Amino acid sequence: MPRSASTLTVRVAIHAPDAVIRVGLANHLQFDRRITEVPPSSTGEADVTVVAVDSADAGTLDVLAALSDRGDSRFVLVVGRQWQTNIFTAVDRGVRAVLWRDSFTPAAFVRALITVAEGGGSFPPALQGVLMEQVQWTHRKVLTPHGLTASGVTPREADVLRLIADGKELSEIAELLSYSERTIKYILSGLMKRLELRNRAHAVAHAIRSGLI
Image 1 (cartoon, rainbow, N blue to C red):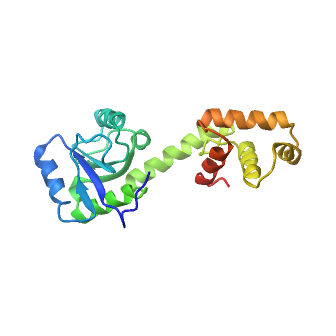
Image 2 (cartoon, helix red, strand yellow; image 1 turned 90 degrees about the vertical axis):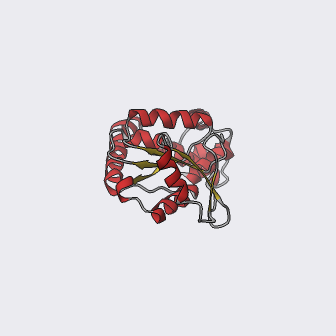
Image 3 (cartoon, helix red, strand yellow; image 1 turned 60 degrees about the vertical axis):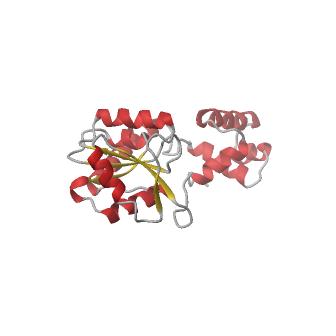
């Protein structure tokens, strides 16, 4: 869950194959009271994990997957030379910010850490453009043909959730949407199973967080 960096110290773990780079990154943090470094081996303790690599490639994605299995899930990548992997997959693995080493500044580093700890993200403009193109392609080629939105909810499911949030009973929803009550139950059941939602309240909360209602 995102932390409020204005009131809480952001715990940061640093992973770098080069010890010199790791020490250099850590030195940028030691005088900022908003940041505290935790050992890389501290499973699940870090709010943000920094991963420094020469080039972002398939091996980097494997590293992120291993760290995610260990408990880390929000990453800031410090990349030395070039980007050679799928940005969409990197985001799916937990990457929330990317910094180029050749344009790296301590202030930008700390700002990225705090932004990610608070639930935000920060990407160089070129990677933002690639990411947006891939999001559009996924929406056009994958989601839309199956009647889904980017939130994974169909317009019909969104209508049902909106009426539940308004306090309507299933029988009322069925009448308003011109479906049988059995169909409304089927819609809800399919939605909750697909998105692993526990109950109707959880489903409504998901819709609110997704901006659907």
